[in-house]
Image (cartoon, rainbow over all chains, first blue to last red; front, side, top):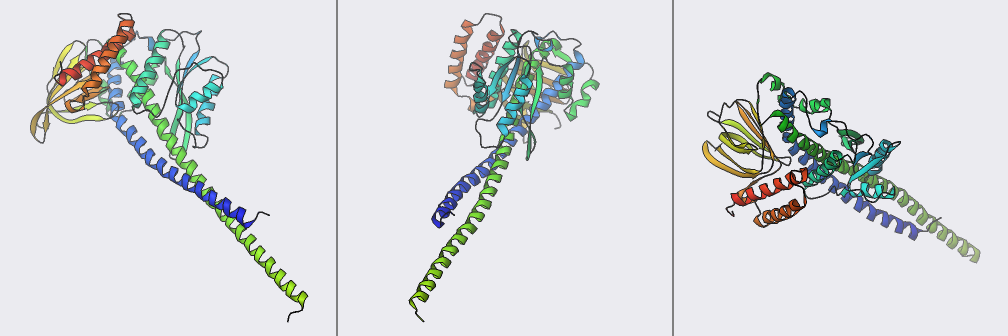
Length: 294
Length: 139
């Protein structure tokens, strides 16, 4: 049985841990709010982009853009794997990495990693030359642009056969799920889905003749890379928000567990202390009786 | 909005301007294009440059001038939407930074083959940096 002092030490160390987890929980809660605001600010851009896409799709019958054509079949698939930079968020990072491994099973892939945890995981697979970027950069849009340029170049040059993003989806504050989605080659259905995501869109076809400068094909060829860039950007924002949500849950659980343990240990400590006192009393009484003191 | 159109200037990070305007002039890939109210439906690709607009603020007309990067402009009879990566007002431009980017992009451009995707990308950075410098009167 552990001594009273041992128990007291353990309780003290648990209380310290609890303070840390509680602080991290509060920080995560504040950061979720910030991440959610960033996502909200990106919303009008998505709406406007969707609306323009709707006009373009209506006007263009066939597009001669590399993004719309199948890639080099013999090349590996390009996987953009997004994770957080830090851990302490339950299975958040390992879930998304596992999803990427599932996708990579039975085919050759080339990784592009966003987030330090994803980079480390890919390195552990024995690949060390994959391009990587941090998730927590000051300017996420600049990072998204770099990633988009890099994967787009590789796709156009035939280094990769397709562009797939594996990232975390924020289903709700309590639940995050990894998702795998194919971005390039761009499917017309995907574009339509993106375009009709906007409530103002119905007017698109009804508008009739839209004048394009210089031509709808040219504008679309400019818009597709932006679409890729923005999709990567919003995936980064979502991964970021999902990470803090996961961390909030993980830290709440850790704090609760610490409380429970502290309670249990406190009872054990009180028992041990009481046992020691009782034992001492018994010894005194026993000693007194032996001496024959009345 | 009696005599203006709804004008929205959006970047991925924020809505830069959302209000009424009587005139919007943007630099498209084909040259400058001015949009007045009741314009026919129009969609253009923009190249980096200076976007100018006469906007209505608190009932008074005022001038809006921003250095914008690549993007798109959509005009409809009742509204104009401009979509760009970045839009910087006079006060937002950091001259030293713009100069630095201009020099770096010019340097990188020398290595890229003319007419290639990479070349065009650096050209866009050069143009945007130049627009920023022009906006602030450093050029």
